[in-house]
Image 1: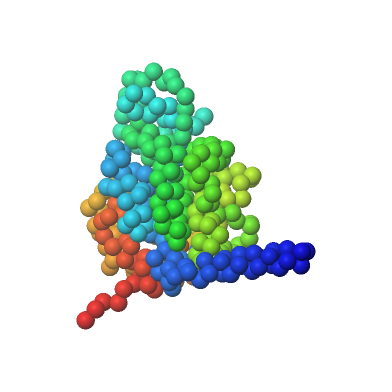
Image 2: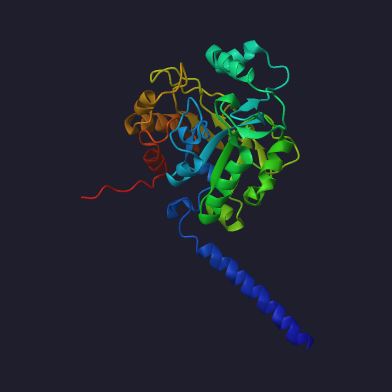
Amino acid sequence: MAAVAVAMIVTVLLVGRDSSAGAAQSIEACNGHAALCDRPVNKVAMAASHNSMSAAQDGHAFAMHDDGIVPQLNGGLRAFQLDTWFGIPQDNFVVTELPAGISREEQVELFGEQAVVAAERLRTQSSAGGEKSTFLCHGYCEYGSTPFVAQLTEMKEWLDNNPHEVINLIIQDMITPEATEEAFEERGMIDLVYHHDGSRTFPTLREMISSNQRVIVMAENDAGTELDWYLQAFDVTEEMRFRNESPDDFPFTPDRGGTGQPFFQLNHWIQEPQPTPSNAEIVNARDFMLPRAERCERERDTDVSILAVNFWGVGDLVEVVDELNGVAATPSG
């Protein structure tokens, strides 16, 4: 009887191993391409949106994109730069809870005088009462806000329906690590986050998909010290400058993160005096974007991991990322 039991246990274990191996072998494409499956995630270029939540579709004023994040996912984007804030909901808008100690002068430097005045005007119409919550907002929630948990829920549903996709979330966090953790836990997004071991190496897309740890999460400001899935962005990422004023003003010098990091974030947009689709038509065009990305890779001696733009639907972002990854379709004829 004991021998039979042992045999049954061994059979179950072997079947389990075979099933796992079969599951791994069944991953025929990662992020849409077989050639990407066995590359480390930091060596795979991902198309990204700057201020991803700033979408006209979702009611954000001064929007930087037409469509929200799920349409961006459907369009091929796999990295998202998100701004998280505390806010207090009112009847028609959300009042931003600004960080303690930030002066009006600092707000003007960050957002501009016109934006500050408009937000102040809206606040005079609010009771400022109510319970604060977490939102995705570009600067001021008064101009447009998306509940953080609701957005994570939509993204998780998309990921559940697309089990061979890996994404990267880069959060400009104006909320605490604890509040971020709570938002990820509320609807189960925490089940998909990638847990890092603290090394300088990162897994392949296949490994991340096999373990179902398919969401890299980074904090620009404060990831805390308690969460192995919440990475301090510029401890593992180097970037290019993000306040560019014209197509002739795209530098190649290092910015946050210095050099020599596993991930390389190429910020590729015109920020000043303000983002516009007409500027995006110039800098998001293949003949402008691809040579710059390739030069950046040569000068930094690394591969682009995150190529981020404004107005992602304008120009050739996804096609350029495919070329950087070496998976671009070969023209017929």
